[in-house]
Length: 58
Image 1 (cartoon, rainbow, N blue to C red):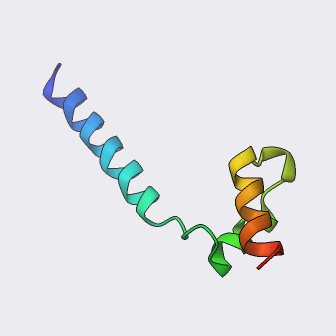
Image 2 (cartoon, helix red, strand yellow; image 1 turned 135 degrees about the vertical axis):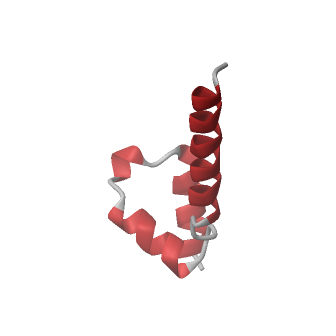
């Protein structure tokens, strides 16, 4: 790999890790709001179950 390609890969990994750390905790008010704004067709089965557990049936 060239140095430029390696640098791009390192930057991409850092960006993804940084964005993942900023995601709200499942079950928090921010997470519930985020899920309400997300189209229901884009929810995974786990997201739907977590939404029901934490946001509907508190």
